[in-house]
Amino acid sequence: MSAYTVSLAGPGPWGFRMQGGKDFNTPLTISRISPGSKAAQVNLVPGDFIVAIDGVSTDGMTHLEAQNKIKMATYNLALTMSKSKRPAAVMAPRVDTTVRFPPHQVLAPAAP
Image (cartoon, rainbow, N blue to C red; front, side):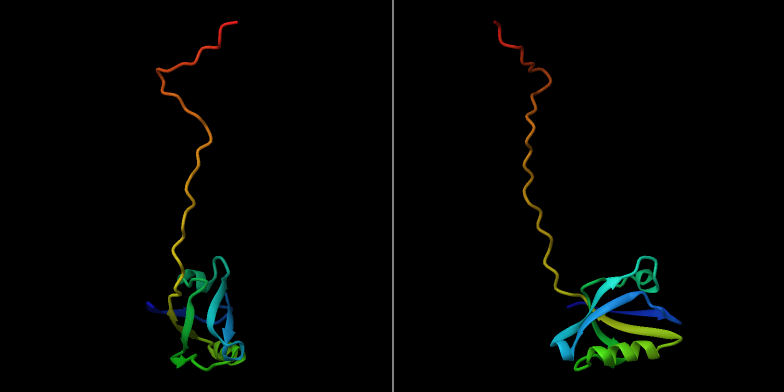
């Protein structure tokens, strides 16, 4: 997984929502970014994992502990993130339902 670090200038609101935590048996994950927010400006991505908050590992951190750690950040919020393993989007094959004839081929109506 690819890790990256972002720094959001305070104070909050930061403009993101998270889900998960030790109490949910899932990693802390960005679930939503508010358009135009501080989180959007540093290109946080929904689905990515929060690995550390202000240098403190989120491994074993409950959702409430993570919320409180984020709320305590008043001047700057540093987040270490890890890219999620999102499957590549698979495009369905295009089915063209229109029939096109070459420009030189013109169909004349059938004779009566």
